[in-house]
Image: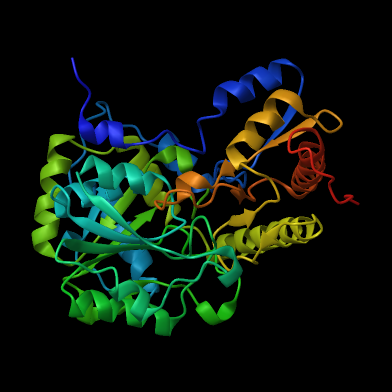
Amino acid sequence: MQISINANRCEPSPMRKFHPYALAAEKKGKKIYHLNIGQPDLPTPKAYFEAVRSFDERTLAYAESPGMPVLVDAIRGYYSKLGVDLAPEDVLVTTGGSEALLLTCLSILDPYTEVIIPEPYYPNYTTFVHAAGGVIRALPTNPWEGYRYAKRERIESLITKNTRAILITNPGNPTGVVLDEQEMRMIADIAKEHNLFLICDEVYREFCYDDKFGVPTMARFRDIDENLVIIDSVSKRFSACGARVGCVVTRNQELQAALLKFCQSRLSVATIDQIGASALYSVDQDFFRVCKAEYQRRRDTVISKLRKIPGVVVEEPMGAFYVMASLPVDDADKFQYWLLEHFDYRGDTVMFAPGAPFYETPGKGVNEVRIAYVLKQEDLERAMDALAMGISQYQRLVMKVKPVAVD
């Protein structure tokens, strides 16, 4: 028997692969601060649970393959507030943003065709592209430039006869980079001029910490209707990751027809989750203001703590709730294993996502990490103190170098 080539090209999730070591550490009595997964701890709006409790149909039936009208209309209403008018056929409901990305890749890629993605990027993009037989063409960035990538010459230099799409996350995961309007317009122009799909993962849209960015969405550029594919989700926006409800938004009806074939083959997204998700879109705008203010406070705490650790290179993220940082260690993967197996600081240790899997380019990101600042203030402070002490001890005990003292 043989496993497929595409499956073997995929790698384990860097956010989840240390789970067995974490369980072993907890059995030893260690307190682990999980900064490895973007699971918000802010309360999910009560509207979701109230809608689910109110469901009183006698039979829990299949929903429509493209999505229940009540949810499609709620999504359209949300976009209308952003100044974007959508027809019902422009929205296709998926099982989370992950399925939206996977089905998009399956619909636009053939074997060995290429997708340009700025690196570092969300590692599951690799799985989605490889599952479709595609190839990632990495657009390099680095921490010393703040991971910015919106340079026309850099992007166009990667376009070949095999290029099908450009895939960006805005605001960025893992970097927190937010594109300004000129940068968005330039990337839209490139996609249009080269007849490429432009896939925009906008699931962190509300979390921009500088008002000059507004609420970014490529959907405002109507001249790229045929090129544009928006990936969206309720997971991060409403602190509802467990609902597993996302959507693909595109006015390209040929692509919508292709996507629908896959949606029909998986029948439907869970009925109850769609009902709950539709209610989420009714929440007051104050919900987003409170969430953004809390994440900004947490960001400031993490950045302040990281900048006190000698040898760390980090730029202040402008959006989402992640920060990518270069640590003064030889290998972040090895360092994470050591933190779980051999270290604690007053009973505490910490988990992050090692950086190498966020890159396509071999050898890059080896000493980088992604930190998700999704814990309450007190826990974040303790986690960052443990990380600082862990770096110091790791340098002395494993790397055999004399560390700079940590305050």
